[in-house]
Structure formats: C-alpha cells, structure tokens
Length: 75
Image 1 (cartoon, one colour):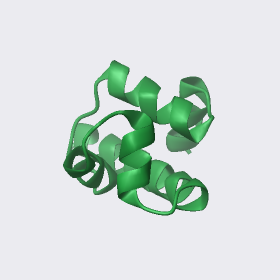
Image 2 (tube, rainbow, N blue to C red):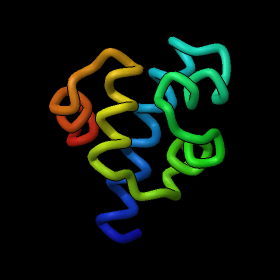
Image 3 (tube, one colour):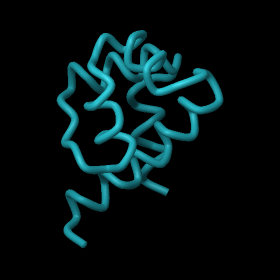
Image 4 (spheres, rainbow, N blue to C red):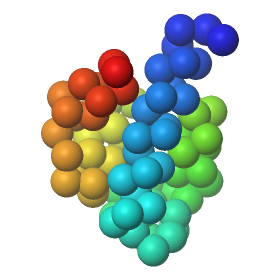
C-alpha cells in the first residue's frame, strides 16, 4: 500500500468512527459538512483524497481540530 493510500485509510477510520458517534447517517454528516453524500462515502472508505477545505469542513462538523486529527492518524 502506498504511503498516500495508507494515510487516507487511517484518516477514514478516525473520521468514520467520530462521524458514527455524532451523526445518524452519512447523509446527515454530508449535509453538515456541506459536501455531497457520495464524496462522504468515498472519504469514509479511504478512496478519496481530501482537500484542505473539505477536511476543515469535516473537522468543524466533528468538532475537532485538524491538528488533533493529524496527531490521531500518526499513531
């Protein structure tokens, strides 16, 4: 697995866990993030590269700092 893919998968695991705790569905999560649900599905599967703008929207929706998310995926 490439290093980039590995990071996307690690990030998707953390985001998915937090999103499941906070939101009833991917649709609700997508709405709060202001991105489409198909993008959310790809992100949660680790199949989509995430722009900084989208990552910021996700972190805001999950009420976490981007730096905390990065620290969490480093482990």
